[in-house]
Image (cartoon, rainbow, N blue to C red):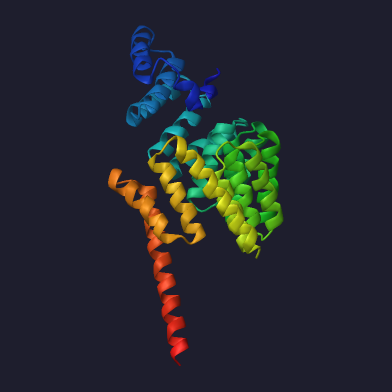
Length: 308
């Protein structure tokens, strides 16, 4: 039976929705209560509808009717992890995988569980096994994240590059690779990735900001300023056609990077008046306050030194 496919939420969530599917399966089960496959299918729909206890009950019935079907353990593991029962979910998925099942969904989910429990070696093994079965951006990111936790930065960089050969221009993989190369202080390598992103992406402002940050870290301050001024020109061009809270926050980020704090504050004031609960604006406001405080402390120190 091809119930492993039901582990993939996007496919299972296709129309009709879980509630309609549950109603259909209720009728089918009433007519044929001894069919394990129907109970298993309804368990999937119960999980998608967040009706976890009912899902587990159906899985128990399916197991009694078809004790040799390993898909019961797969679905039990996926249900238990959504309930926050990671230890039990790990055990169920391990039992499923122990039968020799090669399933990227099961491996990736067990990897996430093990990462949450701090077992990054186990998580890395699962993510690598999942990638051997199915190349997905998320799996490349998960594997790289485990490698970063284990401080295997060269492996993480190589893995993100491998992902980009399969998914050229994927922004999440580019951002991850830049992050690792910066941490490794491979600034030139990071700048090459940013240049590729700038060539591909229609949304250039934040990549130009990132370029400026990397150039600053590399000690190339004049070039960093040029990149940030290019970011300002780009976001001004966007704001000339449409003004939104997110675009104003991005411009405030650019002003902050350029040290133009009053202009950053002016943009944030506009955003916070119109959207007082906008989290990104509050986060940037905190950075702005910290920058003013740091400058104040530096100014006070310089004034004190000058008076001696």
